[in-house]
Image (cartoon, rainbow, N blue to C red; front, side, top):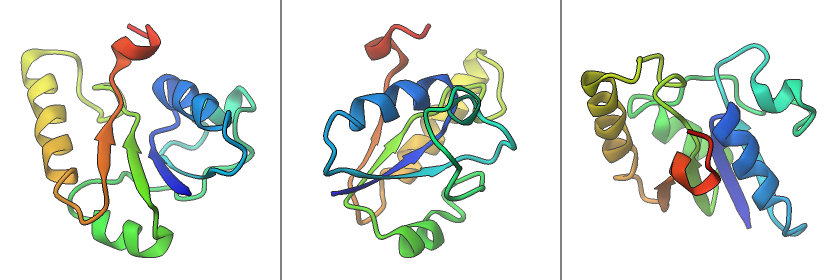
Length: 116
């Protein structure tokens, strides 16, 4: 199974660690930052796709990666919005747009890993 993880920050780190529990899972990581937390911590050796994945370029990224599943491991900070009501609404709106893809796209909740 090939899984695209969008986001390699603190939530991406936890997501990638969970996915690695199944050695048959191929993990592809997308993140726009030069040195995201997953890279700094050594959880990943490289970022596969250095892009800010949005509804505008998602189809292109999906075509390049051909994943079986996409996990959105991004926080409001990763979307470059502060955690305000408008920032949260922006994130939720963007996640709704991304979940309209032809491949399953699931947002990962920060509460699951206790990162809040």
